[in-house]
Structure formats: C-alpha cells, structure tokens
Image 1 (cartoon, one colour):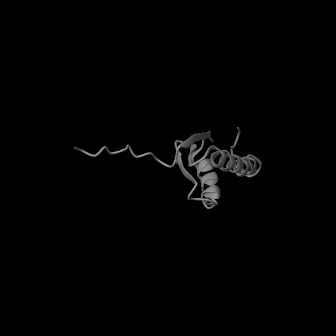
Image 2 (cartoon, helix red, strand yellow; image 1 turned 60 degrees about the vertical axis):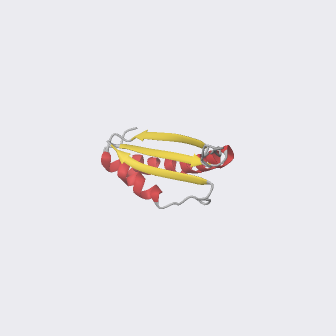
Image 3 (tube, helix red, strand yellow; image 1 turned 120 degrees about the vertical axis):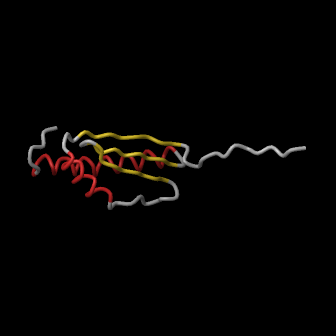
Length: 96
C-alpha cells in the first residue's frame, strides 16, 4: 500500500501586486533606491519584492495572513506616496 503524499501548501497564501508608472527609468529607479532599504518588520510573515522595468516600479507582496498583507501594503503606499511627491516637487520632468 502506497502512502498518500499531501500537496505542499505554501505559507504565503495572500499576495498582491502594485505597479506605478513613472514614465522614466530614472525616476522609478530613484524611488526604488529610496524604498528598497526599508525591510519588512516581520519577514517571517510578509515578503516584498521590488523591481524597475521600463520606467515602472513593480512591487509584489506575499503574506501568511490577510492582515499582515494589508498592514505591509498600507505602510508601503504611505512611504511610496512621500517619495513620489518628493520627486514631483524636486525632480526634473516629473509630471504624474
């Protein structure tokens, strides 16, 4: 009799993606550099991966619970908004 193997369930059950189009590789890279240094406070519960592609900041979140995903996403959007406003105010050619 063969033993049944249960399918592996990922602990990262909740996820979402965010894409912000800065229409400039330089501006997207500036925001990326400003935000990538902030690590998740609970990396065992939330993961965040960021990249810049064609002037867009791409962010992927995964979490073990919806509340951790919501808190991480919300905090990230707060600092993203601040970084974006700073570029709008002081950056060259930034029109969102």
